Each structure stands twice: as C-alpha cells, then as structure tokens.
View 1 (cartoon, rainbow, N blue to C red):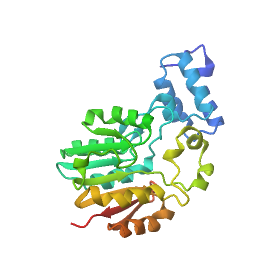
View 2: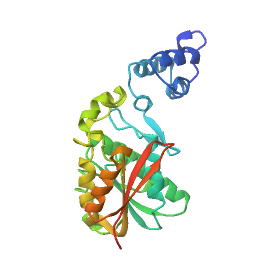
View 3: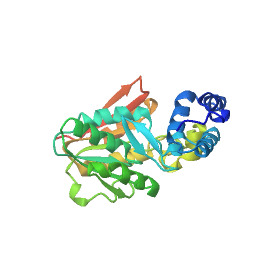
Length: 269
C-alpha cells in the first residue's frame, strides 16, 4: 500500500527514519517490505510499532525470503538465515533423480523447500520428507512443502519418520540447534525473545543435537548416502570428529561470504 499523503508519520521517509533509530541496519528495505505487506494505514502503523519493539520482520509480515523463494512463517518459529544457503547448495549437489531427501529438524521447512525448488528447476525429481519437534514449525513446514509433494512429520529427529525409509535415504540435510547453552544469552534479542529456545540451544558445547543426528544417520542412509549439518566454524573440527566416530567419511565446507560452515558426512558404499 502507499501511505496517504496527509499522514506524514507513514511516509516512507518517516518509517525508514523510525526503523533506523530503532537500530535497523536495513531500514529502507524493511520499510518497503512493511509497506507492501500492510493493507491499510492502520495495519502499517501497527507493523512499524511491532518492528520498533523488536519483533522480527519475518514474523510481522508472515514470510521470509530464502534461496529465492518465499517461506511462510508464524510468530515464534525459527527464521531461516541466509547462511543456510550453503547447506542447500551442498545438499542439492548430492541429489539424483528419485533421491530420497530428509530435512531433519526442519523448522519452517525452508531447507527442504529450497532443495525441492532446485531439484524441480534442474528436472531432478526427489522424494522429500521433513520432521520437527515444534508444532508451530510443523504447521509452517506443511504449508511450505505442500506444493512440493513433501511429507512432514511431528517428532524428535528420526522418531516419526516412516520405517520404510531406513537404509533408503540419499541425503539428510539438517540445520539443528548449535549455539552453546551459555551463548544463547548473547544472541540478538530478536532470536532470544522471539524464536523458540529449542531451535537455538545445542547444549553445553553446541553439539548435543548434532551428535544425536549423526549417531542415528547410518541406519537411515542408503550406502553412499550423505548427512549434511550446518554448524559454526569454531565447532567444525569437533563436529567432523563426531561424524567420523559414527562411521561417516567427513569433510568440512566453509563459505566466508555467507559466514557459513557445513559438515558433510558420507556413508561408505
């Protein structure tokens, strides 16, 4: 919508200035997103107030842009980060026609949706499954993966995946929580206050969920299948050692531009 000329508080210049004063680094871009999402001046006024108060932009407008696609979000659901594009890119490079792909701890389903979009674009059909323990995230994932024909399950890691998938999965892609417990308090307020702690807290060293995911991966992967998990650069070697101990040939991929690190494990053929 366009702000009415008689309301200077809702002009793009005024909204941008207000967002910038509240600490927004991308105030002009955020102002445009809010204006585009609002269906009335009153709605825009409310949205700007929410953003100034610290609510994530994506929760306000109900979506996030990720890998060129729009991901539906509800308040309280983990917001996909741009750095996870590395995970999507690496996972997509390991799919073949008919591959079974699992988006583990899927959150909103952004990783799976992006992999499916790339596969469709490359005319490489895949069978997609996703799972998460958080009910709100599962609702979002079902919205985001519905058009892909993907299947979404509510449960902890592998617990509610179909038993028929055991030994059949080509690629498991996971952005599991990897922030050390003590470091959660140091995260930006947007994450600490508006995203579920279960999507952030990875235990004392940040690798608790990664360990569980790696320990069970061998039972689900097909011979030669891959497990890819996002982590931090400082945790990379310890995470790779976990993969190796669980029988996976491990490599570390780093993208400095994205600030992203992914551990890649391959089950021997």
